[in-house]
Every structure is written in structure tokens, then in C-alpha cells.
Image (cartoon, rainbow, N blue to C red; front, side):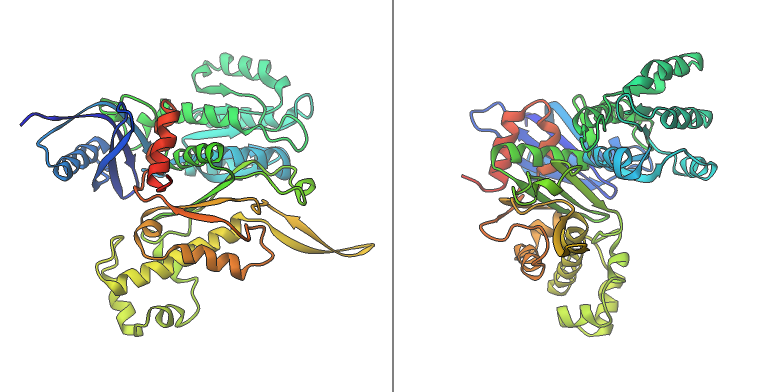
Length: 456
């Protein structure tokens, strides 16, 4: 039997599983062909898991062998993209840097404001980040803090990329300092992420984070041979989901993506604020991602269980306490019966609703000299037209749309869409794959996304 030729494979290398999605994109209409799944082999070499996932795909497509022209990839394995972020004032440059890093798909392990302390430096060594981001000072404003922080970080001699996204006046001195230490290869300079007050310049920094991640991923555990198979772009998986969300914003309207995973729950929103709240949205990015590292339905399910009141789960899924204990003994990320599906559903509901609490703005009561006022605080999502559900639990369990609708109904002060919002499922489970694919094939990407969302 002849091998099957496929235009594009896109690998998603997760902390637990590796997925390979297959697409034919050079036909008149691009097609999602299917997926293969295997355990991630980051402890040895991720290429082993990739090859097993392709073998699984071959079985699904009923062919002996697969050949491909291009392979893209996204990765959240080995801790994903670990970053530390260091700025000047928390509510200004630090916040802007944090938003940009999250937007690019990073897992932020340390955030500092003002000058780095000895304790901060010790934490950086323990974290062993993939990238360190240093900002501080609007353009032609304060410059000393960022210079101090760069010099202190360099003293650690970690041999990892350092991105500078601060006051433009520091560029020459920073370049000279790296050159004198013969460490130019570790420096990336990008436009100021906070060039003036209340303006977040996220996009240039996000692009450099992607590029730096791609250039240095071979140094991550188990990734040293990744480019033996991947011959196109590779990026952090959450960043790829954000890319898909941004494409949907351009083509459909204001949009939010909810991604409940085994380890984390991520929410991505790309939305303009309402005219009523516009004056209160300075400093809020158009595209925002929040990641909840403690909310996951598999790896972090024990954390989520602690968030329930006594007997709350038992009452919700109609089991005894003993039954629940038995369910948890053999708990896996693929439920095998109705009781297990019911358990995953309540865990998914808890993850989704707590993540929404942390992502979405709210109306706050503020007492002023002229009396009580109600003002918005946080991201305004009242103009959201589409909510996209992705992640294994949200797209494979029944009636998960009700989780979001119930949250909207029970939180009248939250800055959420109130009517006519459309909830769609990523039915083919390809948001993360299509995001990285869109970097080269944007027009094909939107067609694949609309197919997965079942939009005519």
C-alpha cells in the first residue's frame, strides 16, 4: 500500500499527551482529516511521542504510513514557556509586561516591581526560566531601574535569553553592556511595552517572545531533536489559542475563548469596551489572556476538589461519599462511565466559573465626596458576541454551554454579555493547531476555524 501524503501536520505537545492533527489545505476547501494521540515523552525525547501519535493517526486514517510536506507545532510540555517579568511600577510597566507575556502564551513564575532584590535573584535561579523579560520607564522617562535590573540578572550568568522592552533611551547602554560581557547572543531588544502612560504596546513584544521561544526550545527538557520532524513554526500552545481567538475577532466580532485543560484553565478575550465604560478601560489590553495554574480537571483536579463545600460534589452528581472516593482512586482524564462524566462536569464548571471571576471586570460600589457611585473595574466584555468553548472537557461533555449561561445569569454585576451572545464549540478541537498554522496560512486558518465552530 502506498503511503498517504498529507499537506500539513500540526503537533500539540502537551504536558500529558501529544496530539497530531492532519490537514489538507491545498484543495479548494481546506479539510481537517483527523488526529492521532500518544503520551508525551518529554522525559526521554518528545520525538518518540510524536512518532507514536503519527502511528495512531495512520491507524485512524487506515493507512500503513503517512508522509507530510509541512509540520507545525505548539508546546506546553516541560512547564511550557516559563518566564519571569520585571518592571518599574506594578500598575504600569509591570502590568503591561505581564499582559504581553501572558498574551504570548507564557507561564509567569515571578513578577517584580522596582529594583530586583537578592531574594528575587534567588527565586530566578530556582525557577530557571526560559526567558527573562525586563521593562521599566516610559520612553524618555525613568531609566535607572531597568538598567540596574538587567545588570543584576546578568550577574547570575544563567545563559538564557533576556528581552528588554523598556525606555528607549537605554538601548545603547544595554547593547554596550552585553557586548562588553561577550553576551550579545542572549539579548533581545524590542519596542517599549509601555511607551507612554496608559498605552500598552503588546504586539511587538509578543512577536519577539514567539521568536525567542522558537529559537531556544531545543534547550528545554526532551526537546533537543524537535526540529528533526518539525520543519515550520513552533510556538507556546496558549499563544496559539490566542492567535486563533484574534483571527476570530477579525472575522466574526468580539470574542472570548474558554479553554479548560488538565492542568490549567485559560481565558482569552479580544473585545472592544462599550461606549459607557470606555473612560474606565485605560490600561486594559484589547486582547487579554488569564491563566489559572491551579484550575485543571486532571493534573490539578485535587486542587479543584478542595474548592468545593462539604458534600457539594456528592449532592451534584448523586453519589455517596464512598462512591466518590472510589471514583477518585481510578480518576483519569478520559471518563469511562456516567458517574465519571458527571464528576468531570462539576470540576469543569468550577474551573470555568472561577476563571471567569478572575478574568472579567465587575461593577464596584465606590463612596465619594458626592455620594455612592457605581464604576466599572477590570476588563469590559459586555460587547462580546461569541464565546468559544475548547479543551477536552468543554467540547466532549454534554451541555457545557449551560455552564457559561448559568454564570452569566448569576453574576448580574459582571461586565459580561447579557443577550444575543452565541456560544460555539471547537468541535474538531483544533484551535491550538490552527493558531500556529495561521502564522503562514491566515486565510486557510479562518476557514478551518469556521468549519470547527460549525459556522456556515
